[in-house]
Amino acid sequence: MNTSILVLWMAGCVNTVRFPPDLWGESWTTTDGWWSGDTGRPDTGLQTDGRLSVSRVLGGCNDAQTTIDYTAITTGWASDATLTIYRESDGRMEHHDMSIMDLDPAGTWDRWQIELEDGVAEGAHVPGINTVIACEEPGNVAYAIRLQDDTQRTSDCVLWGQSRNALNIQLISMDADVSAAGGCEFIEIP
Image (cartoon, rainbow, N blue to C red; front, side, top):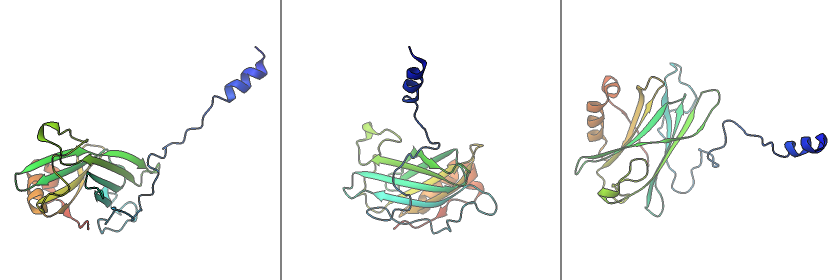
C-alpha cells in the first residue's frame, strides 16, 4: 500500500476529544421552565477557607409531575454527592447517589445531577433510578444534599422542604460529620 494513502487513511480516523467533555448541553444557570431557586449563598467560587460546599441547588418536580430532578453546583471538587428524600408521615428515607455531570478542570466547581422517576411501587424501588415518594405528596417531604470530600467525609449538607427539621434530626443521628457540624444548613427552594 502506498504510504501517502496510508497516512491519509489514518488521518481520517483521528478524532479530537475534549476533556472534560460537555456532559450536559444546557447551562446550569438556566432559570426557565421548572428550574427554580438557589441556596442563597454567594456563588463566588471557592470560599476563603477552601471548604467544599454546595453553592447552588436547582430543580424540583417536572411539569408532568413524573420525575424529581435536582442539580447541585459545588465550590471545589466533591468525591460524591447524595440526595436524601424523607417522608415524615411514615419515616421513609431514601438515599440516591447523584451523578457528576461537569467539572471545572481547575477544581473550583462540580455539577452533580439526579433524575428520579417518582411514585413507583415499593417493590419496584431502585436507588438512583426511582423513588416511592411522589411529586404530589402532601407537604411532609424534605430533601437534603450531602457532599463528600476526597477522604469520604461529609463536607457540606443542605436541606429544604416541609419536614426539614425531622430530616435534620435523622441525618445528625446517622452521619457523624453532620452531627459534628450541628446539622445541615436550611435553604429555600421555591
